[in-house]
Length: 169
Image 1 (tube, rainbow, N blue to C red):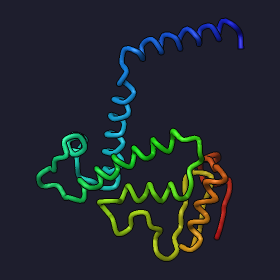
Image 2 (image 1 turned 30 degrees about the horizontal axis):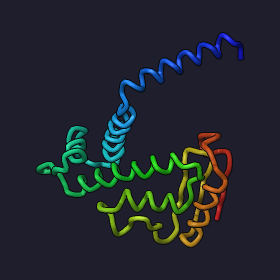
Image 3 (image 1 turned 90 degrees about the vertical axis):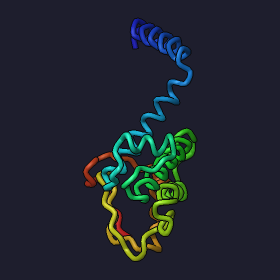
């Protein structure tokens, strides 16, 4: 890299550090806002009937919205709290394990679906991702090991269309 570019980067970082000192809670506020938006959009995709404003009220004030299903409220609380776990995992240097994924599922379903929280499905299933892995006919007894191998292999979304690697169990 040339010295002028390095100097420019150093100056911009110094300016960013100076601005960051003015708003010490800025990152926390940003994360909170992002978590609210992600909670709303993720639940809306799944059919949750709460609006963005209603989602915020449920999370920040702990109130229920008249005429809305209790399950929708529970999904919001579960999802929002599970995001904190994801942030904790992201801050750790260790790779995500199969146990971490199961615990995340447990948190997402803790109140809204306690009968399935943290458990694998019964029977066989098919998982196809828009990433570099596809699983077909994975039997429940082999799923924990397969999830563990994914984490150990630090697999990525290289290929992005599921056409790079295919694993069958």
